[in-house]
Image 1 (cartoon, rainbow, N blue to C red):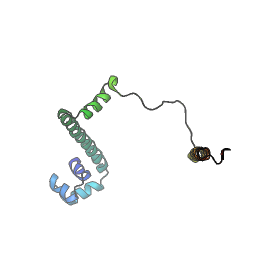
Image 2 (cartoon, helix red, strand yellow):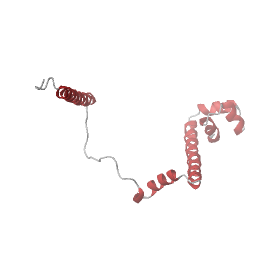
Image 3 (cartoon, one colour):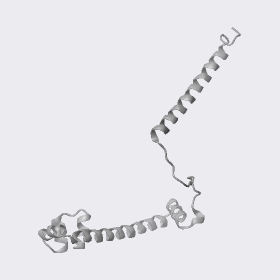
Image 4 (cartoon, helix red, strand yellow):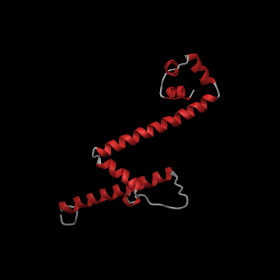
Length: 137
């Protein structure tokens, strides 16, 4: 049953799974209605994860052996704390509650103030450079 479940989670049709495990498509259908099918699927998923992990390890090893320095460094940073990059996030204790609407309004207000100051600064620069509005004209 687990072999059929494995094939089914891999996308095989009932007919293809049945042919592979030497059963009929009707048997696969009946198994899928059985309460034990859930357990068979869970076992099949565990086996798939194991296969995936094994294949991934091999792919990583092959990549590092071919000179992929980035991959090698990434692995070393994870397995040796002395090589791990510095933390880039601040750690805090306690809860942080942010009301997103209020935070957005505060950011927009800050941006408006910056834009207003820039506009005032550029207007001031225009008036002082042309000599007509700065008391000399």
